[in-house]
Image 1 (cartoon, rainbow, N blue to C red):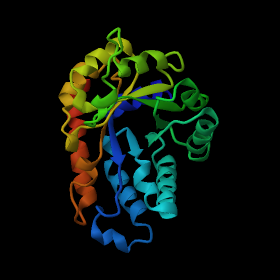
Image 2: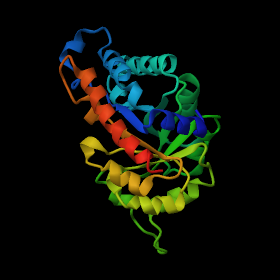
Image 3: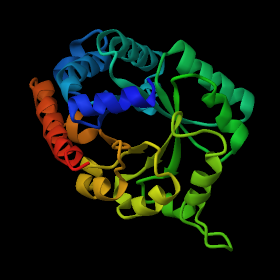
Image 4: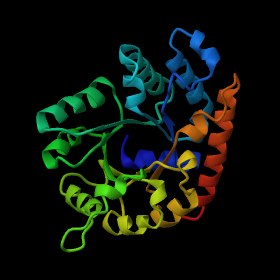
Length: 273
């Protein structure tokens, strides 16, 4: 999916919501445990319920890999279901890969050739040769970690060099030598608030993947005030606040309602462009 198609979906749905499929076998409704594949059954129900209100899904690989082969199978079935039933959805593998060049090339082959995903989160801290193998696929996206929402982000990402440049700013500037606004996005946590102003000074046109609203306490209004650009430029993720809003047999309907609430807030923000 290219940048224009992504923006058209945002306009059409009046939404820039990404639903995070952080599916934990210990948190899904108990009645689903009787299913042959409980993880996929949960994901399918969530997808069918929330698809009208979002433009992207983001399975977090850790939740699937924790279950071994069964979890990986559920992940593959989820991606296949999205591609076949909701081809307009942007699918992000939240895998945070990044290694020496030949290893990154294998990761890229896995997610972009075998799995047919649209985007992959990548850790940039091993430098250019660990990132560029992911950039060789037309219509595919690298989403680099820039300024994350976790408490420990301050340990390294905000450290300054002798010229006062912070590490996340160096990542933003240097990585533009490798990719561009048509194949590279950045992860910026919703809890970073006005830091979005500093980020937009360096990458005014790139899409930002923004986790951290909902359960992590980030403000959608603040993210939009400081991070939105003329083509929206945001994909805002919500996971737990949507998919685990209800543990009863009505979980999917509740998830749909939570997603609709966020979509309506996003529509208000888009109308201000």
